[in-house]
Image (cartoon, rainbow, N blue to C red; front, side):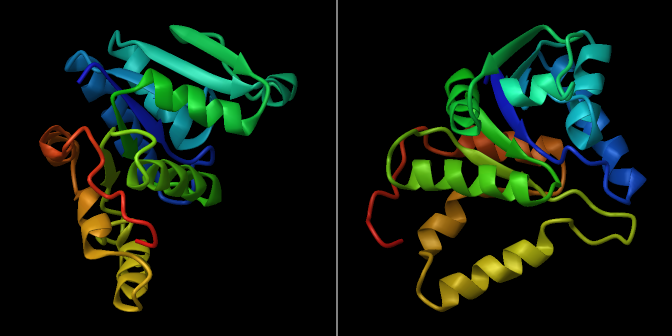
Length: 195
């Protein structure tokens, strides 16, 4: 795996342990020679991942819409920055530049990115594996546990297949996440409509 696309919050949230963990993820990916593709911002967990990777000598490629650059939300101290015209183009470009997706804690934008690439994989538009990094919060619980409970509810109601749920790696740490990504098929096997 040469590069991973990181989806995560542009806000730091209220839990400093998640900011520190995001920075550590970026640094460890750099140490392993895995490039980071991300949304190009400098704030929040997004910025922490980039800081960690750049600080460890890694490659960091950002993709950001021009309206965000005009608001000075982008950064120019990374390896490469692609400026695009829309949020849709941003996600497509990020998907093209990576070998896998790694989702760290975040908010609505992070969820939207996760669900879009998961849907794309499910219908066969790409075969790149996806992992949720279920980082422990200061309270000790995995960050993504409420979402996983909601997704299980959708599966129980017949709106999400068991295969689709199982296709996304859920891991408490980076080692487990990368191992899970490496074991996933690179061609989508979830091509059934309505799953």
